Length: 101
Ligand SMILES: Cc1ncc(COP(=O)(O)O)c(C=O)c1O
Image (cartoon, rainbow, N blue to C red):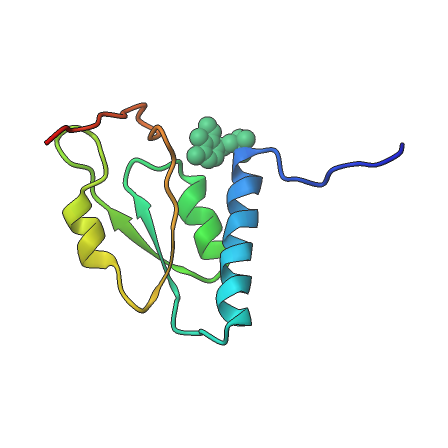
C-alpha cells in the first residue's frame, strides 16, 4: 500500500478521538480546570461513555418540548470549567427544527 488512514470511522471511535483531542488541547494550554462536558439527554449512549473514559464529568442537557437541546440549560451550564460540548446534528432523536423569530 502506498498509504493508509487511521481516521476513526465508527461513531464511538470518533467520539473517543474527539474527547482525547479536547483533553489534550486543554492540558497543552495548562488549563486543568476544564473538566466538564455537556451532552444532551437525547445523545447516543457512547457520548457520555467516551467522555467519562477521558476523565471528564458529564453534565446532561435536557431536551425542550420540541426535542431540541434546551438552550437555557446550555447557557446556564457554560463556564470556566467547561471542556467541551458533544452535539449530534441532527439529534439522535432525528429532530432538527429551527425556530424563526
Ligand atoms: C452519535 C452516535 N454515536 C455513536 C454511535 C455508534 O456508532 P458505532 O456503532 O459506529 O460506534 C452512533 C450510531 O448511530 C451515533 O449516532
